[in-house]
Picture 1 (cartoon, one colour):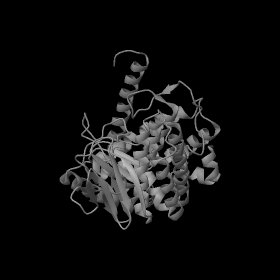
Picture 2 (tube, one colour; picture 1 turned 45 degrees about the horizontal axis):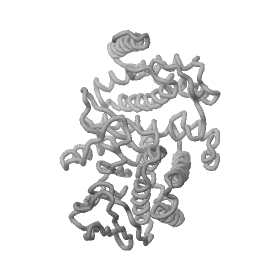
Picture 3 (cartoon, one colour; picture 1 turned 90 degrees about the horizontal axis):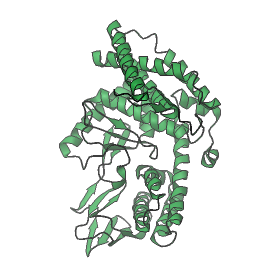
Length: 424
C-alpha cells in the first residue's frame, strides 16, 4: 500500500467489494481522492526536478492550492479531467520548464474558473492555441511558440496574447463538449494535446455529424445500463469523466483503451450502436477501477518475466495484464448476461456472451495455480472465480458455445507458435 493510499484508507471489506465488482460511491470517491493527492504531489515534484519551482509554475500551484481549499471536489474534477497523471509521467523525463508552466497554468486557470477564484497567470504559448481542460480552446493565430499569454479569471475568462484579447464569448473560443444523458455527463476531449496518452493516435476535433452519432449511441447505451444493470450504471456514472475519440481502426471492428495514468478516462472509436458502447463503457471503467485498486494493494509479484495466454489478445501477456483483462471482461460478460435476460442484442450478444464466458473459464483455470500472485492476488482471483461460476448456468444455443470453443483453440495455437518463435 502506498503512503497516499494509507492516508485514504479503505477497509478490507471495501477493497473486496471492488473484486466483486460492487464498489459503492464512497469506495470510488476514496480511489479518486488518493489519485488526486498523488497527482498533486507529482506535479510539485516535476516542477522541482525541472528547475521550475519558482515563477509561473509556482504561481499556478498556489492557485491550485487556493482552489483546493475553496472547493476540493471541483478542483479534483479539473485535475482528473486534465491529464495531469499522463503529463507528469512524461515530465519525469526532464521536459523543458516552459512545458511545466504551461500545463500547470491551464489547469490552474480551469480550477480558478470553476471555483470562483480571481487570479491572473502568465502562460507560455505552445503552438497556435491554448487549451483549458474542462473549459475550452482558444486559437491564437500570430502568437508564436514562446509567446506569453496573460490569462485573467474574474467574472469570466480573458486571454491577452499577441495584442489581442479573447474571452469565452468570442469567435476564437471553442468550448469543451460533453455527451449527456439522464444522470451522466462525459466530457469529449478532442483537442487537448495531452490526450495523446494511448497506444492509438486520437482523432482531431469531431465534426458535428460525428459528435451527433456519439451522442445518439451514448443515450442509448446509458438507457440500457440504467434499465438492465443499474448497479454498474451507478459505477460508470460516478467514475468515468472523459472520452477521447480515436481515429478509424486499421482493421474491422471498434477499439477502446484506457490509460493507467488517467483514471476515469477512456479512448474509443465511434461505436456501431448503443449496445456496443454500453459494453465499452463497462469494460474501460473496469480497467480504471482496477488501476485505482492497485494504489491500495499489490496483486502480483513485480518483475516476473513470465507471460500467459489471454484468449482475447494475440500477444503473450504478463500476469498483471491477464488480471486486468479478466476483471474487465468478467464485468462485460455479466452485463451481457443481463442484456440476454431482457432479450437485448439477439444473436451477436449470444455469441459474444458464449465467447467471453469460455475465455474467462480458460484464463481462470490458469490463474488458480499461477505462481506470481501475492496473497491479496490469490484472494482477488478466488472472488473472480466465484463470479465467473455464476455465469455457467446461463443457457445459450449450443452452436454459440461450439463456436467459442473453436475460436479459443485457434487463438491458443497461434499464441503457442508466437511463444516458440515460429511464424503464425
